[in-house]
Length: 106
Image (spheres, one colour):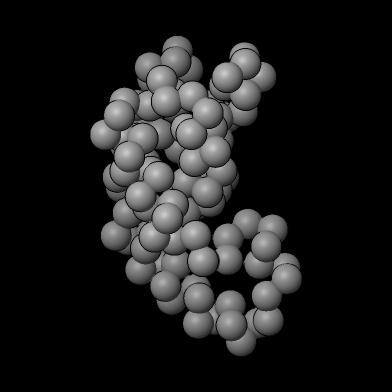
């Protein structure tokens, strides 16, 4: 992973910590970086985020929401809310560790 990619991954984690994106969006954006550079996060954190990403990959977050029908979004928003409650603190903790371990303050 190059410096540019690492900075992008760190910015994603920081965006979550600053409430610019939600936890599921952060996972969705971080997983590709974690697959390329396993040293970005501790092994157990990496596995957790990849697992959460797999569990939530059908949920519309971010820009893809614009392509979904409003009725379907209402249904999906309930599941997104459930997943945010279930996984949110874990995702936030992982992002804090990623940011701290790479020299940025969250």
